[in-house]
Amino acid sequence: MAILAIDQGTTSTRALLVEDSGSRKIVKTLEHQQFYPEPGWVEHDPEELLQNIQLCMDSCNDDIRAVGMDNQGESCVAWDADSKHAISPVIVWQDNRTHNIIDKLKSEQAQQRVLKKAGLPLDSYFSATKLAWIINNIPAAKELLQRGKLRLGTTDAFFLDRLTGQFITDISTASRTSLMNLQTGQWDEELCDLFGVPIKALPQIVSTTGDFGSVFSNGRSIPVTASIVDQQAALYGHGCNKPGDAKITFGTGAFALVLTGDTPQQSAKQGLLPTVAWQLEGEKPVYALDGGVYSAGSAINWAKKLGLFKTFEQIHQFQAPGAIERDLVFVPALSGLGCPHWDRTAGGLWIGLSLDTQPLDLIQSILEGIAFRAAEVIASMNQLTTITEEISIDGGLASNPYFCQFLADALNRQVAVQSSTELTAFGTAQLASGNRNEHLPMPVSVRRYLPQKDTRKQRERFKDAVNRSTQWLL
Image (tube, rainbow, N blue to C red; front, top):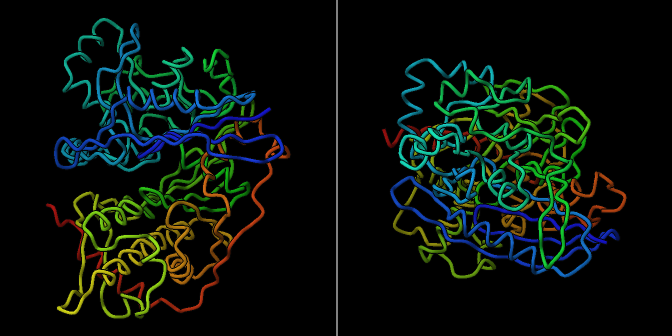
């Protein structure tokens, strides 16, 4: 028997099969299109995502006892309650079309109200203003709302409604919307009214594990027993289980999470996000602090498209000293700055360019900039909770030796790179298994990087560059 984990991410959908023996394999990976209809807008086709999930499930002919699914988090969509067909594109977490709404709410002094109840700053990153935009700009949404047939939610709720007939979302995903009261774990009427999102159109909030209905694949009915945000799934997959345990996933963005225990920690001064890590069925929620860097792997892919390098092996080692040691700095604010700055008006920045700057120098500075931004997030977290001396990382950049060593230096902590590159899906599989971790053993091979250089001066240099990049787009 096996568990099938569906990892529905920003750029692809993957299916990981995990046997009770612990053996695992990727059975299918499907990329989907990215749409950029206007500057700052990022969309996906919801039907394409749904089709890819089904294809990933259908590609597995093994004896599956349960399915777990993880999702993009803040990405959201609207659909018809009767036909179950989407009436909007998926508005992706990176999308910034609602920045004017955010500015208006800030001018109306709504920031503290949202922080107090949802624990989140006002930012277009979260789902609330995206959902309100759908109602105000898509005629079909208004018409369905009038008839009581509009359904709004993050992508997980859409997938589950179509695949299992359950109109539900898990508490970890709901905690990313700005509409859930972090203390009660339920939708908050005041927040919904503030953002203009009808509470009656939202799904029921449930625990991370439990009965999510059944999916049909290859003539079989298979129970779905877990649903969770991808970053929280990765936290679980890293084996983080006590306060202070932390991980960073370097995917499209870089997302750090640290467990804080059974009570949420408000952290407005540090710019961190108190969030629900997970809630096992019949138990209390477990909380975490989250800090995100919007551009990580996406910055590397952008540089590759520009022709700055051809193969990833080219950027695993560099002959020259660190770029920042040569006064070349890159601030990866290609979609603005996330934690702890929360500045969508910041612009990506290279500073220190000269006539002898080479393409690989630019790449070296990008890698260093991503590492320094992750270090900013961890430093903010460490002000609130004591983080363990070793931080576990995964994602595409975790395979880059130069980046990993530079990150250890920037953090001044030991960095552990897990042998498995599929910790998000693995965490989802662990949760779907009923928390029976003894049947799904963790990978044992770990590559560790110890800090070798004192980077305090370089961190101050980077901080200066970040300050220069802020509010550039005002």
